[in-house]
Length: 283
Image (cartoon, rainbow, N blue to C red; front, side, top):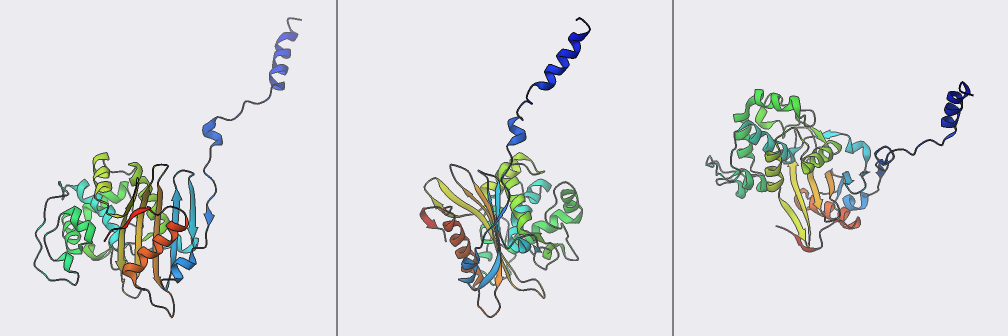
């Protein structure tokens, strides 16, 4: 009997039901989905893509997944990443310190004055970001890209025009991943710098307990259609929603990029019950 006891114990163990998987093993994000939000784009004379991450469920929904994976010039949406670079490399130590305007009259009146990183981000003052990018230099960007890539991380012949001339490119999918990591403080930058950039990200709309924080972009790379972007997230008490939208003029139609891009975002987010209800859009 003493010889049979070990064998009986082994057989009994094998007969027991398997233990249920740990919660972390069974809790998986739902599969990604595809949505048809073409009506929002068509109403503005545009075609484009919209990527929406619901952080409550982990589900990502895409309109035109192929375009969502395609890289385009980021235009002024790159100012979010560049703001982190400027802080990281020490060319900006105070986001409210003013930088003197160079006196060159440009087509957008709001640019033609002194700006801080905060105000320059709000109005997309190109001259300020070009000046600060030059101070970072290629070696500075190379060091940052080595630990935190953004899109194709390509600077091209002109560092100061890379995010406008079609050299530096990023997809809507990549924008959402980058923004979600910034929102969570999970990028390869200091916690303090990520908090600062989240703070200066413009508020485009606000309601009771909810606000839309996002950066716009508008560029015309050589040989390519004009592209409009809005990327950011909706802050909500029950969980944020991160998104990226880019659009261009549809064949045979007219797309007023400036106001049209925001109307597209509003139409999609309202349809999903995510637009801040209350005070509405900010100028």
